[in-house]
Image 1 (cartoon, helix red, strand yellow):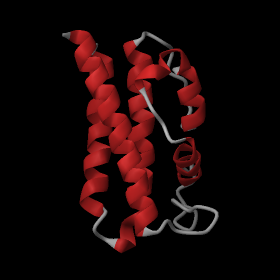
Image 2: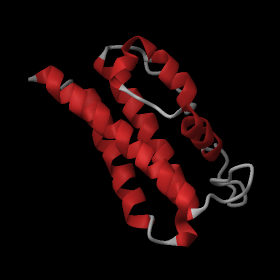
Image 3: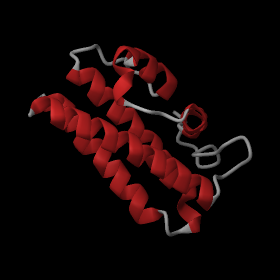
Image 4: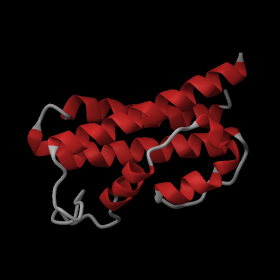
Length: 134
């Protein structure tokens, strides 16, 4: 596996582990959602790195996914969740804006859904890249 792609996946895994640890706490659903978004963003950037493609300085999951569409047979995404997670990522650091969806703070069920999508995408890419290396 290319070193940089591997590094992106390691950082994505850390976000996934953080989300898994926090999902049990209803007060942390916005943080779980944020880490799910970050995990997917880093996985998409790992794919770009793996294929020697330029990594844009964006956080928009839809835009990143479009960059890897030529290789999209390796990733099955739920576009609705991707779009919702895009709403979770906020450049601002103001607490009132952090991790809010149009309906407010994500429910624990919604945060779990985000986490499972991140985990699914992470596992798909990790497995694909590892098979390519063998």
